[in-house]
Image 1 (cartoon, rainbow, N blue to C red):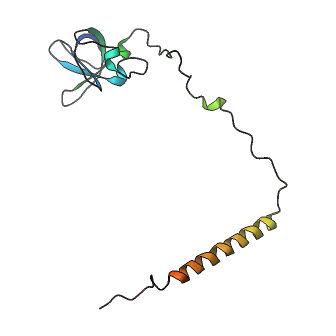
Image 2 (image 1 turned 90 degrees about the horizontal axis):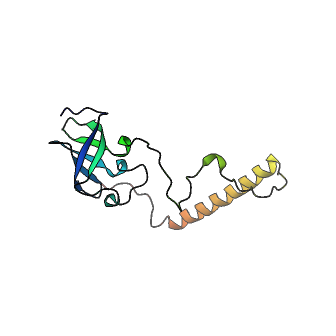
Length: 146
């Protein structure tokens, strides 16, 4: 049997792992990754597939090393992901609610804001200088010894 990317085939599940399932395509084995098992979220592959079961798969990729990537969900006739009951719909960016900003206060003039910034900056510089002067004895810069 000639394998081609995009071709839909039938195969038999020969092994199941946490990350995917191995499918025998009649002498050649390919793998279906867990993300390609079903159009919905798959937590446990064994909830969707059983060893020995015959499944329809689509060939996604044939690697240079001979590895064959398969998809069950892309081989389905009607791939329409259904939302499981009880789950919230996906987050919609456009309909998000933006909380009301803090109540506006009368705007200060540029000069007032600049004055407050300058005062805060001077206080921080003074504190930093005081701290550095206090540590000067133990962290003084010395010239390297020869």
